[in-house]
Length: 153
Image (cartoon, rainbow, N blue to C red; front, side, top):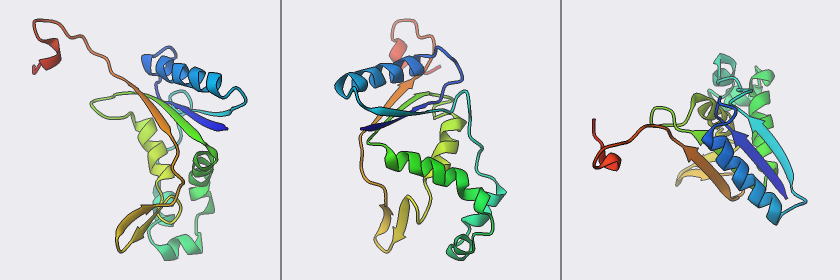
């Protein structure tokens, strides 16, 4: 069993890190021989997709010509980590009602036409095997008053 564990918070003791660590501990209790590959995007962020990556993926011809082999090296590595995983655990905070940019950078690198999905006449089709993915999301805020969950201001 291989587990890919991704943390996205820049805070060392964040709630999302604690949640993902708890999920991982439970999975390791169930599968003590599991191998864990850890990717800490919060403390060691990956580069956002740049010009070389965009140029390399601009068309099937550009990808086949491989004008920038270094541009897709990180993407290949991250997709390989995902392919090798039987389970994925992601711990992430919520930033401005969405995921932090470090997680978006990872998503941008692993969602790649011809590698992790294909465009067909029937729509997009995933090329990666299905696997369980546990996403631990934490969001902050101070809520008080009579109806704190329905706060609109």
